[in-house]
Length: 427
Ligand code: GDP
Ligand code: IMO
Ligand code: MG
Image (tube, rainbow, N blue to C red; front, top):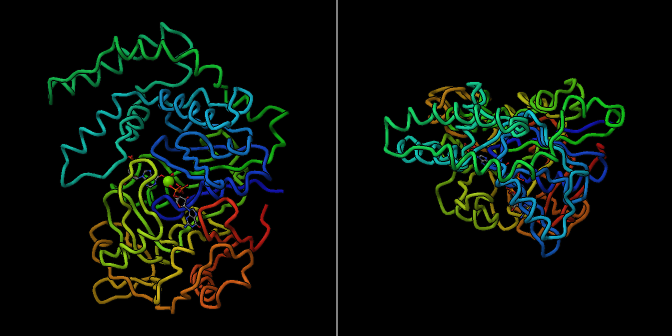
């Protein structure tokens, strides 16, 4: 009975929410460990659709859910998301939702700074979600940001907020006339502190308590491995470490507690925002992938860029995350393609390489080399057993498995909760 960590192995939106929802019934708790409300994890149950940004997806199955210390939390957004889910009859209380009191607080001005910078950078922008994630992590690393426990004592809160706002206003004054209002921000925090604090726990004490120690844990990653601040396509990344190791550091747990690593991969590739994308298809095929896969960002509604499955990129993801098993999602999106391609190497100059170069300059210049497979041109949604999949779809899966040398244990063949084929029991 092992714990499990679920991470997206591409550039995000691989279907993590759906897989967490599928598996969490077998776990005692679901723990979100990084990122913020830049995430959008979708769970579809019949006609009902839930999109969770900051809350762990385990809440939909009424699991004990925990938000770790490496998450950046916009308290206003958090309360709104809780209310939205409650309206949809999801049970959320201080019994099933716990927040690390040393998690960072994301404030409204973080989002303003994020958006202003993106506007300023214009052609060199990152294409962020505009939710203030980068600026909030910057304040954390610079040791001036606020923590949830700062809400406990209003005097400390006043002093720390004042310092933080003063810092930003010195910069803002030099580039614009706009300043952040301490009074308004303080008032806002005073109005929500009593709603947030009951959810907060000393995470070290909580996860090491006797009651918690034996629980079977499912860690939920956000974003994708290629958006990792250190290993991703920097600077076109998010501002947190998305690798599974973060799960242990965020919760303050022994690293071996993260258990097996399940990497979620789409049967093709998508990315929102700017940055290198070797297999991107700017052609009709790319548009068809986007149309079939409804590839619009769950958070910003922006169209996602689409391309073929990239085994070179996924091999890097397997290495940096230590992926033990794969869930291959959205295979149904390929149902009506006569030809399907899988990138197995890159051509860089005169050389063929089977690794991802680190610099964007090199990555922007690689040419993907493809294996071309015949499409199955049949509907796969509704199929419950791998044997009943079209032979050509089985071959597609086999080729990916052989290239990556990691077992595919789940196949997702539709957005709905039950559109899934279990190939091997791993929990
Ligand atoms: P996440 O951020 O990794 O949780 O993924 P998102 O929820 O942002 O994006 C995945 C999208 O694909 C959502 O709209 C899901 O409902 C949908 N989805 C998930 N799995 C499948 C699948 O197997 N087939 C299809 N067609 N859609 C899927
Ligand atoms: P989930 O968890 C896809 C991308 C943004 C941008 C870059 C930096 O749903 O997979 P940020 O706002 O984090 O500073 O933006 O990261 N990005 C995501 N792309 N899915 C996500 O989350 C993302 N979260 C951030 O589009 O390119
Ligand atoms: Mg998403």
